[in-house]
Amino acid sequence: MANLTKTPRALIEGRAALIVIDIQASTFIDASEVRSIDNMPGYKDRMLLARKAIDAARASNIPVIFIQEVHHPSMVDFGRELDGDEDIHCLEDNPKTAIATEQMDFRPDDYLIRKRRYSAFFGTDFEILLKGLKIDTLLLVGGLTDVCVHYTFVDGHQNDYFCRVIEDCVAGSSLDAHNASLKAMEYLQTGARRTLDETLTTMQTAHPK
Image 1 (cartoon, rainbow, N blue to C red):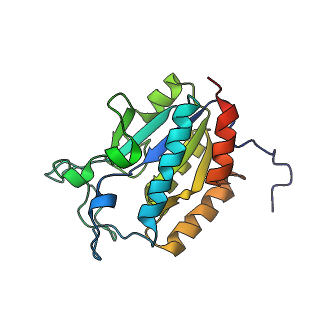
Image 2 (tube, rainbow, N blue to C red):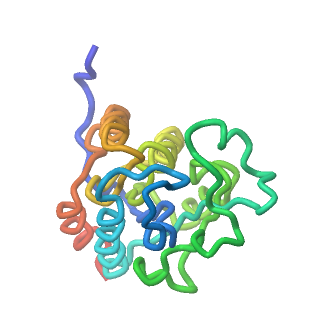
């Protein structure tokens, strides 16, 4: 039965943080047809759009938190991650694993959470940082929509954060997977799916200087 008593929520409830998930150098270096992780058409363009969200967040004093997937060269920390479609990826000693510094304007004093699993919450200091910043709403950009974005969204939801995915600025392993994950996230929180334009407008008034 549909929830007939759900309360309409604002795009940003309380204090927000922009979470930039796994926008790493490989996106802009690797143009090969065969990749360790499949990307839907237009993937790079959607990652580049995330820069607009980053710039707007900085202008509005909204914290920007970069998430970086990394794995030890010995591959001891992959666990079951290679049991599916993904090949070896994001090794610490590979330049492609670095945050896309120039494209995303990553700065030395930015917040950075390194993760060994798909969710930014799993086995990291992410929630400690969110609590310290007194964050209520997570604004998600990056990739993959159907993997790291989705699983971070779910863990944020289960930890009682308001979660919003800027759908212009995320991309999946395929278009079908991307769309299915956006639908699944909207199922968990009505109003989870937001456009970049409406998010930029809201950012201007959410955290005035």
